[in-house]
Image 1 (tube, rainbow, N blue to C red):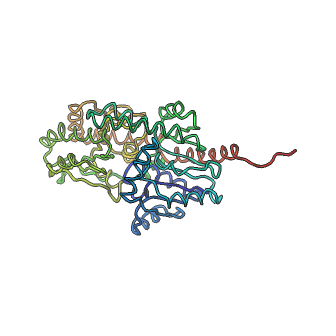
Image 2: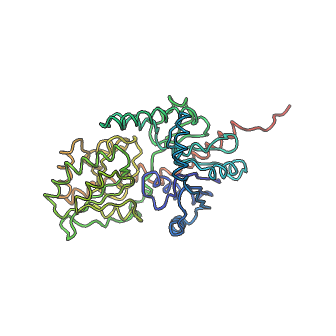
Image 3: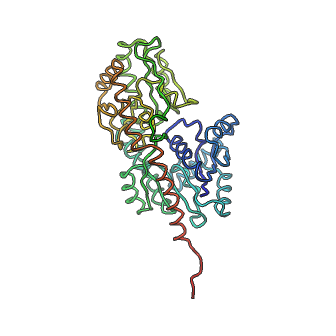
Length: 419
């Protein structure tokens, strides 16, 4: 099969959950099918070479520049006047649109994959080529959830307005696609109602690793009593208000107490688009290392004694970082939302907290107990292998593309019937 992926960024090195999802998918599909990419981004020969070296069977990779700041600003107002999400303007490119129009009409591809909701704007002619849209979650539903837990009144209003515009956009465009992909039944049920049953399929995220646990990267974490001290890793999109709030709560209510018990603890934070107030809080602690991206996420995770996920209102089931940390044999400590949609048993596959007090108590317990960290990590890796390995998830994606191709043929088959 010939598949063209239309992506908001180059998925290498995968520095957030969305990029990791695509990277894992390409890891499986590129061995079996022709996979070409058109990505928004900045051309970087070093990244391009690293990407091709890591996934040598990938086809062509074309990079289209992001729109300029002025273009984005004017485009946002244009989308607002159309009652569309203004975020579409950040990903709007006439060059990319022209390339996709040519690719769709040429018949070169069996399926075109459009990732995240903002890339759906490029699917304008459903009749040309079979299409898969993979927003991962019901995006408007996620924004409604974030709005409900946000305390800041201005931000709450902004999130509600965004949610309403996103819902309107989902209703307007999702019916164009041959297939829609989300990661949980909750998102499917929501989109079935909002968008009028636009052929939504549920496929969970993947850890990116095989079912064989012996083939997984090995942990390299220092013991809690080591010279360098224990390592706690926090990863997530800190530009997301719900994750940022959870992390801020941790810095304020938990980390000072942890430092009192473990003065040599190191907190390593990975996240993009961090607000200025959070950056200022981070700078108050010499024990915190902050990264906007890391070259090797596997190494970053396997060096951790504990992986902390402070998400307060994310999408159900869209927990790529949690699943990958579990697949890498790590002890994961997270909020209830962090494990939402993952069939994990609290105390067996990870530890779940509801309050800052619980988070503090559980984190200290884990840092004091290497055997407990090991047992949690081993059980987590087994669960991730059984539910989220590439051996389990890859064939489901493959079937999705074949189903999209078949549905498109049934819908737009223009062969004349016999008289």
